[in-house]
Image 1 (spheres, rainbow, N blue to C red):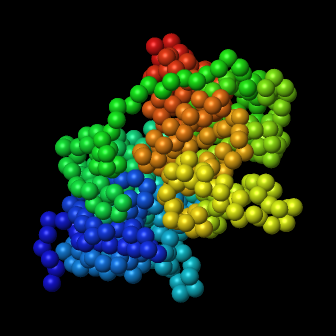
Image 2 (image 1 turned 120 degrees about the horizontal axis):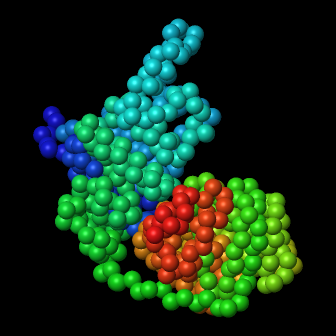
Image 3 (image 1 turned 180 degrees about the horizontal axis):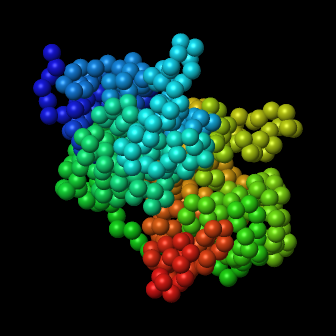
Length: 507
């Protein structure tokens, strides 16, 4: 007999262990109908594990779930979806080679068959897709290929897919980790429409300011335990940070600049794929921020400087000498390192051990006569970087995909620091990591500039680019809109430059 409850979902005493690591320990969670309930915590706190259990992706070791007052035990995500629980993952699970309507009704195409031979009623499929898109007023052609959509549009399609399956709960795991500020506002608008329809939204994030804007209630997880649940009106940034980190938040101190007079990188009239006529100087000990909207060319510029993309025009001087990085190998040999935006696709070998990911660019240095790796030397070197970067792991031999996002990012940083670079290009280095790991990376960056390293810091987050950078170069549609000194930077000016308005309009 169903249990009468005011909640659409109740999780009681949920525990989960992975190979001796306690991911969740006796966690309770309750979700009201039509509310936005945020779940926050540092990477490794258990957020995704909890959502994967609710969404039928994995099973708990202990504890029970009640959905609509009835005890449930999902054996697969499809079973949970058919009951009304849909999960939208941080890494979107779409079929890019299919069109919008095919993705919306993927797995349910039999509803549109008009014969036993499997022919699809295209008119019915198109009409149904338009009707589904209309649920949240999403203006996208149903016949458009998904590979041509932006990240925010793809998320919209994932939400439509959930709604068309009559989802009463939608779990969003780090939904705006790849979105611009404008796209995030659009996402929040969609979430508001969902809750008005009576849909409950579980919003998983590590961004405190974000959840204070969107959530009705906030649950904090730390080290697999539930720290507590607050009404948003009772929550503050300081209180939530203390719950997440287990310590009081210290007032941030203005960062001391370490800029020296010496120019280590001079770029004149540089052009390539996605950018044109870019000129700037990078000083020794400087953090030069690069900000711009999606499509501004900021990441393409970083890749070209590192030799991953070709340079079509212009000149580069490294320590006053002409320099062209026609490959990443040449860049590394000359002391230029890069941490790319997409760590999983471009930097990490996800199924290899942590130790291999850290040392894979340095095998000749660690080998004997280029025949075999010296384990004692390899372990000695990586242990130094594990301590330096406070990488949390149980064993260097564990797969890197078992680490949290923040610790994966630290593994990439360790690999790059091993080359003793003079310049390091950081493209969205805090993307998808929690507030604690962010602060550690900021402290590391500051210590590197104090030693004289020059840093190109690419970010789409305005508060971050303002707090970290000594100067900020703003790109608009592949061109340099301007370079602002630290004391000149304001949010209004950054947006004005990034959107193509003249400086006078930003005053």
